[in-house]
Image 1: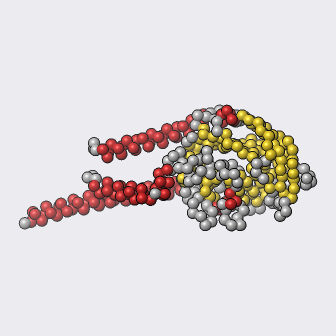
Image 2 (image 1 turned 135 degrees about the vertical axis):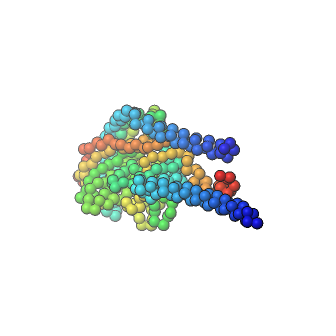
Image 3 (image 1 turned 45 degrees about the horizontal axis):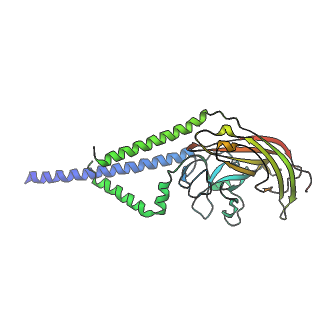
Length: 180
Length: 167
């Protein structure tokens, strides 16, 4: 009777150990992804070091679905720079080019006006009511590099959330059913 | 070790890594190109220098812009965005940059051009500091690659000035 109990116990312990190992491995993967993301945030100086281009307002330079690499340095904002900014009250960042800059002598603060390359008019219509200029605190970063097409994955996942659930479900299934 | 899943996974990882590597090399190859663009801008006419109803000065002018930006194009270039900005200093602002005109150059053939145009965007000051104001006209360009790092530079042409009185 004793060795039956022992075998049952050893079988149970193998399963639990395997499960725990898998859970820890998964946790490690997620955590290292997070670490890389936070490190990128530190290195580039901005809260979102990578953004996906969502609209066609910067065509033909940036198409919908491209991703942009951002940096934010202490250097002053100048015309021609492609800046990514948030408008108060909207959560989607906008990627446009600065076409007008006025820098105050006394404080060094800047008033910035932006416009999408493919738009006919500047962005005054996009700013909040009564806002005529962007200021430094609106601007999250400058675009310094770009990769085409890679951002479509994010767009598809945002616009058709069912695909997101299918992907996560499939991944979960893979993790559970993999033998090692 | 030989299941379909493993093979698909290995293939995908390898191809993504190889693609990323190729993109990085493409971007790096831009460093070796020799670039010497040139430009010249003349002001043909100051059409109007007026004070708007709520106080800011506005200028309307006609420019003659000629430029040769052909050397900026490499095989990794998607387009060059060029624009002309007026830069000046006022008592309140250490720097004002106002973009007057811009163009998207899609390929090398269009990169050498001469154009006479009035300013595409309105030249409005923050205040009324434009009478007799001296300013630079700067031709900026922004090289947008097919993949990788973007490059921006400019040519500053100083010595332009606005009339002393409203007209």
